[in-house]
Length: 456
Ligand SMILES: Nc1ncnc2c1ncn2[C@@H]1O[C@H](COP(=O)(O)OP(=O)(O)OP(=O)(O)O)[C@@H](O)[C@H]1O
Ligand SMILES: [Mg+2]
Image 1: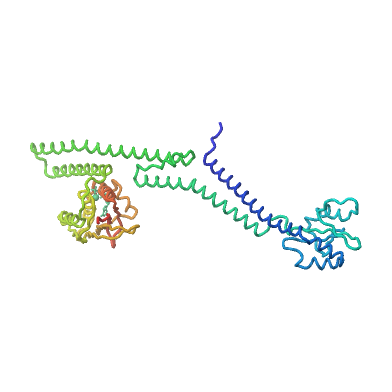
Image 2: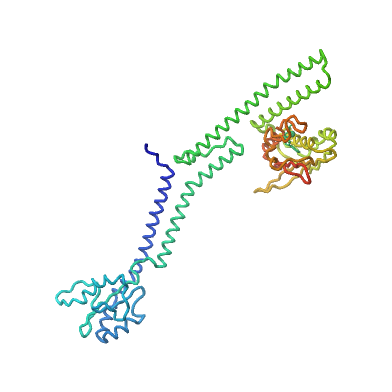
């Protein structure tokens, strides 16, 4: 079976073929230009009076006068060499004939000098000079260089032609390969960032070559990921809803059973806590999936400094039971546009994490200021940092704690919850065009930084 010829191969072959043809044409043109100039000098000298002058000098002064005349640098024009050869092929001025001309001169020039036919005068390549004593000489003018190679000008012309061709073909290849690859890279990056609806541009997917096939595969992959994510979300949402009702019925049944026959206090407290935990976990899953599907519902102008004040006041009781001090420093008038309930839940989780991990008798610093972003053009942003003096997070986990269900302590441990808090917080802040990061604090502990664009 015949293998299909790759379209990319054909395209490259066409480009390289075009490069070779282009180079040969340019090279020939430049060579022809230079050769024609050299030839022009030669023809001018040949058609001039040089031969007649030589004949006259030979007739009046003999070979010695001829030698003197032809060795004078003013006699022969540039780019041309003059030989006056006797029947043996010796030049009157003693110049050696270049070896590559010798055969040609012997056959076509000297033969005419040697023949003494009087009634036949063929067209001669070189005029014949006859001295007073009858000695015959050939007057031979040759261009200094017959082959144009080796000349500096030719070399430069060839190099320039090669450079032009290389530049044009490289630009064509870069356009043919670089552009679609870049566009494909952007699509892959968007999908990797979580924008699963991103697709390669049709200009790339419509290509008939391997790059087009790759783009279509990438699109297929993104589509599958999108479908999987959507079905996962649907599953999580459905499951949470399904679990809510039996849980509510369980709570009601517990209350009824309690009324008939009270349980020992410890068991009762245990069951209530576990039911509460389950309720909380289901609520978190529902909030998380809802945020994925429809990021922000309400958009209000709100003040982050006020939001943090209320939040800190509400959390003071919890912090107090753990003997942790909350210190808030906020610049007034930090306005942003967003959903107040979502933003509060984002900050609340970070603050609750800090309270949960801070050792007794330590302080949690909450700072909120406004600054200019580094991007172009710079914009005003609100920066909030929440810093505790707890055990912190190992550096290789600083990013991973924002993924759903990442907990450093095992589930069920008192210092952890569902493991969705930071994932929800990241969703909340990115949905507000901001970002959230965690970094080690000095001397110990964790600092979580949040940035949101400030409203003007
Ligand atoms: N301030 C902190 N100091 C030390 N570890 C932290 C801190 N904040 C978060 N972590 C670690 O990151 C993990 C993920 O935090 P996240 O808020 O997402 O989940 P969680 O607090 O365990 O549960 P949830 O917030 O859903 O109730 C936590 O389990 C904890 O191990
Ligand atoms: Mg948490």
